[in-house]
Length: 550
Image 1 (cartoon, rainbow, N blue to C red):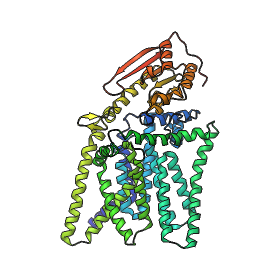
Image 2 (tube, helix red, strand yellow):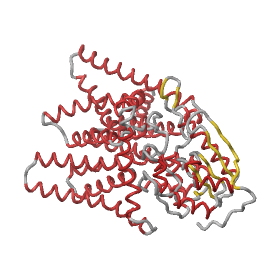
Image 3 (cartoon, rainbow, N blue to C red):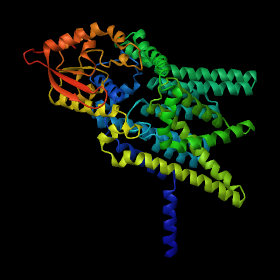
Image 4 (cartoon, rainbow, N blue to C red):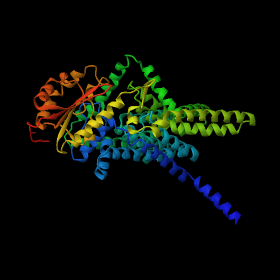
């Protein structure tokens, strides 16, 4: 009887240790960590994507005409989600969580394919935890949240293609890489990974027959990559947008953003100073990834140099390199940009940890004790720092505190942007409670999330004012002048129920006159960070709205 009971217990432990069981536990942990951030207030970028998707679900196809715009698949996918579950902040957070959970599975598949099950499970665990970290703004639903899945799948498929040589895997690789690129433009670095690996392979194998095969494979990859691009262009062409408008919204305006970012960084703080400042926060949260990745890079580089490297080693090293290198292109180093390295760094860190432990076993008893003890001590220290950094964000802070106290600029001084988000959400709630769903609003400022939060249409096609940001232009008023006549024409037609003033009215004289003639102050909100004051104007009751032709 005792033997049966003992056997039953051992069977239970074996079942618990199965990869599927561990993977389910990792998925549950990832979901729980993200669930803790469902209450955090959304920012302008996320709110803008939500607004575009909500309008698309309602049948109105919009693109960001002011830039720097983003490709549309995020909005398209979320529009489908809205059609099924309706528009809400909770729904938006759940939408992002679904993609992150699928990315955890994809990363396990990728790492397992490259280095085996132990590395796969550890990589999935690291990714699930650190992609949800508050220092990299993992609890938000930014573009990187959706980018993870095609970004990881493209590398996994490229590994499979490189090992098998089958054209279908190259085609699917190109398809996923293009999907990653049309989710967020930085996904295009995947093509640099493919190109660098392909050039290296061609350089090693100089057989003319292999050159022919190489060309066929990369033609198949390019064919797969064209499909999403053609699909997006065709969709928006049939909804009245020109190639020029699409190019400027999705690429041209972003090139200007990159150029301006480096001009902006010529002023204090410098590029290196800003990077150092960001890295202090990033390393306190996911230092394990960086140490593990550096350990793996050294070992894999040594293997490759000795001629023992595998295709997976070179592909993953190029993936990590380009994912990190692209962060430097904008010169701004926003915290969520570092989300792009979580995938490749998780795989390499998991490999570095598992391999270091294995190599230590081959040492003499004393050397093994020192090596494993040193690794253990280092990991424990980094885990303690991670818990000290993130615990309060996950388990102590309220949603308002998660928003207002996310990033500490210096001792006791926090990024004021979070406080502004809290104020703007309260304004959006007030507008929603005091307007009819058929009425429109206008926001004179860079806060498009107010439209999504209030669930009220923008009174104009130019609703973001993003082209006036200091990160996009050095002359905000000049940038806006090209759109001002169209904005006023739209406002006179729609007569918005509320106008939210964040920028100075004196900088938009036509709007100032329009507001003075037809609106009264409803709310005057002051707070201790920029922009310090927000005015909410309500349409005068003795000035009935004109029919809305839109």
